[in-house]
Image (cartoon, rainbow, N blue to C red):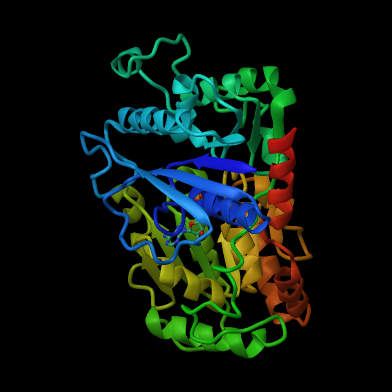
Length: 420
Ligand code: ADP
């Protein structure tokens, strides 16, 4: 099949979060299964050439625009994001009109606008990676782009106009049909639910593999994790200026620090970790000064390291070094971080929502909780620290590391949807 993906992110060359990983994971898996895969992205100035780390079997098209909308030093966060991505959609659609594909796969609101511009489109699939960001336009913005429509919400437009749409876990596919998780779109979602499927993301096991990961101090497998993780823990403790102690539980959170990820619960998780005698490293990308300031109380604590940045190499080391991975999301469409943590033998401590519920089983490969409050964090961490000291810990790690999280199974499900 000739498949084309249109997206705002593609790992590793243009990545802010899980969207970038998901698009490249799916594209690579379909290419490996013998399909012709093209990915269309904006030509951001942040993309460093040459694109040496790209797979040769994926064709990458970078869309340049006359007014340099993508030369802003960042992917999102500009006042004119709606116009920037509508421009991208218009140019990408013009490119698509001149070629022939079997299926067009649009990702999130940044690609949803293509359904406004494409006239004779082949089978069109739309994926909701995160319903929170919908691309709500002003009429003036749409007029400026030369389109007329009464629906000003780009995500809603794609849901209405596509042949089928998906979201990134079975549980999230159910949750978004409710007012609690539907972000105001639940009525449209319910009306179109026969077009909706939940397909769990995989992870890119070439990138996320403790056996080959070059960012680790020492590589390891599920047979050699004890010594491997110890060496990585020591390297991380050195790097983050924490006391060197292989027996001390090292807890980490690697996340965008935004309300979705439960920053207050992470904050309390740090407090609880200290109380239980552990160490905590927070690697949190954060544009919000106030959010950073809320962590100030821990700044001088010797057992805590706070890094407010996006740092891919350090994230790898931390997955390899940590014993536990805290992810108390308020909502989580799929979540890649907990799956990466499983693969690296860092036991996930997560809230039972969306993809976290579909991947982490309490007492088997991690620990889960329901109600997002401090009392839940207390019991979660107390249970995890207790298990850490018991023999049973090994089975958490070995079960997690044995899980098949590769994209192949999910890619097969997408391919079926492409063909229907
Ligand atoms: P989301 O897409 O909502 O941010 P996911 O869990 O699906 O959450 O994916 C997050 C991805 O981004 C993972 O690969 C994670 O390791 C990475 N990531 C998040 N924050 C950081 C950070 N501060 N530094 C490095 N990598 C990060």
